[in-house]
Length: 305
Image (cartoon, rainbow, N blue to C red; front, top):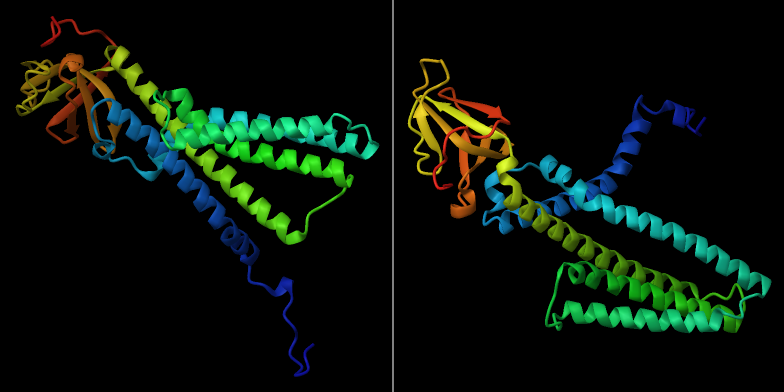
């Protein structure tokens, strides 16, 4: 009871669903951040594919969900490597702490110097990559260059910590403000380098996807288009009198391959795409019917002889 005689509100008096709402509100920022990151990596991969094929990703009309789903392939391997590496580092750190406590760390000074030297070397490599000072850059460097910045900073910091433990004894710590500042700087550098490296990895994967399409686009599902009107697809597609059996359709187009289908729009590659690099976009409407078939084209296709 309060001084005025009014019962004091308790957690049990909260409206039904209040706890659920409070939890949802608390989770919104991380969910939004994760969605934004996934969207970015998905966009990088899609844009890389389109650019390598001589197209623009803007013509596909992908939604946020489409980009998020297309980011999974770019993130699976980096997350696997990151998780395994973090686990190994944690195990190694526990062994180092045990050796320091037991006084069996005669190897620590040499290891600390080695970590610092390796960290400096990685930092130099990352800086040279960032400044574009290498005469030749390839996919391997595009991924490892940014990651080297974060790894180098972490190795230097850990080597310095290990050396301080040897000099001042186990349990020696820096002042709170110094630890907070150092941790903030390290986490920022590591996060930015990881974001940059994974973004480059997504771009590399996109280029690989494009090369795969170029080499095997004729194995994509074949598309037959029946239309009541002339779609003007010659000379990329072969046009014949309608074979649909439906009197509404006058034209049948073949020699087309399905690249993608997004929100009612069909993105097609002609059989002669290797020569003209044209992308055909057709919207669904009542006067057009699309058929998918895995069968090879029985008739000669324009530009493929």
